[in-house]
Length: 368
Ligand code: MG
Image 1 (cartoon, helix red, strand yellow):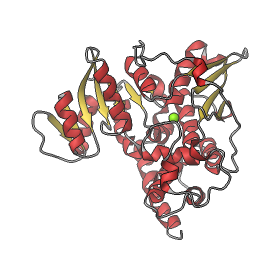
Image 2 (spheres, rainbow, N blue to C red):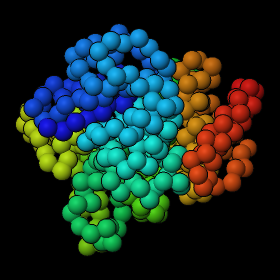
Image 3 (cartoon, rainbow, N blue to C red):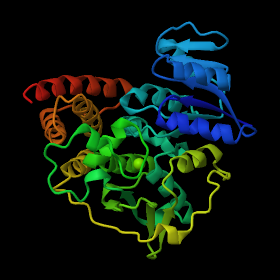
Image 4 (cartoon, rainbow, N blue to C red):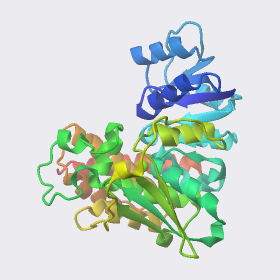
């Protein structure tokens, strides 16, 4: 029996993690649930999974569990004896728990790419034991097992291209259109990031930190069918591709079962049902956030964090109807060009960069 903690339990990754717990009640036991706030959904989960602990940012009245809350509660959580912490928190809110869990040497499976990116410069050397949940990174994680790291020539992350990869004019795109991802069922933030292709930019940076591979050996390719999730190319010319149905429960399930494999997907996926698999070079002119993300990754220092924070805020503004779809790039670029933070050396430095970026963002966005 593996005990697990599900952080972000009411979100997209969290609920799909619990789907897998339902399938394997003899293998997985939920020991802790955590969400950003108390909700009926969380209460229903508490009733169903009966976790020993619940973590919430604020104190609440919940019966029958040990409630951990606030800053102290977060530290207590990171000290709990739990076999695997699943981080399904969306966005930069996941930074502190990720940092504390890594510092405490806990086994972590994470879908929280923003935290991986922002903490990369400071605790990237502790990323070795992380099991990635992001589908592309799960694919690369598995592909890397086919050879030695020094034999890796390139890693290739696939991108569905989102809803607009072959649409010429992106002026006046509505929130509904941008949220309408053709292949994946995901949270709002990552759906918008997929539509701008920022998601792939962030994933390149995430891959750099997770696998310690230099940027000139990480590539993105558009693959609209989304059956190939990632490819590891070795020096002998062999390319090991990970192919699976487009279902997040597969990478989540792998993270939960690792190093074993369980029968996560019961149907037989016939290759002929996939039909044609297409691959295209991404157009960085039409998706300039992809290019900007790569530049920020290569600049390193504070830039990956600045990019991540600015994008999260810009996406929120877009979802609220405050700025247009194409403004997301303009605002993020404006912020990246306006900042000048020294490279972070500590966790506190990262928090300062986040604070500073938010201030610069508010200034930049005020003229939109
Ligand atoms: Mg992904």
